[in-house]
Length: 133
Ligand SMILES: Cc1cc2nc3c(=O)[nH]c(=O)nc-3n(C[C@H](O)[C@H](O)[C@H](O)COP(=O)(O)O)c2cc1C
Image (tube, rainbow, N blue to C red; front, side, top):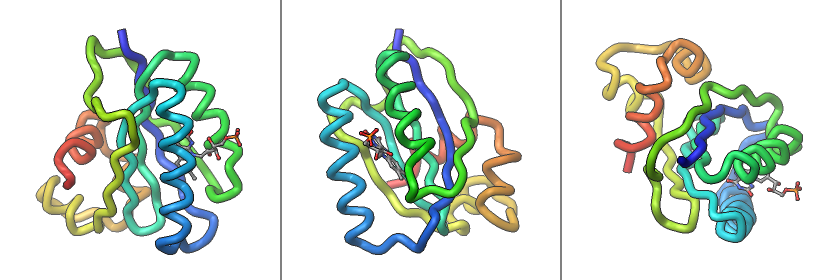
């Protein structure tokens, strides 16, 4: 079984392209060495990420993310197990979406990203993660 963890985190400063590049390089190297896959999306200052792998490796990475100074707050949305991985590449997919993408997917209007994440059932978040290109 594959363990997964879905969380969101709010940036502590406005990320620029270099910040994203540095973050992804670091994340992809460690994820590959720990056989952790997943997807990271960034929406108007908030990161939403799903990490999947062994429970220990996923929790170890999340423990680092939780204390990462680039985020001011993190919150686990859901954890669970699945039979096989959603994300197969040995890297971390990354997309930037806007709130209007979320609203299009949900066919309604959310005032901001954290309100959406707090209220959305996990399955909707997963839909967003797997649909966004
Ligand atoms: C939004 C965000 C997502 C991150 N995602 C990952 C990730 O998927 N894998 C990873 O190893 N580190 C990720 N990191 C980096 C970790 O927070 C941490 O800096 C890195 O894993 C090194 O951990 P260490 O300082 O405990 O050695 C992420 C950081 C941020 C801010």
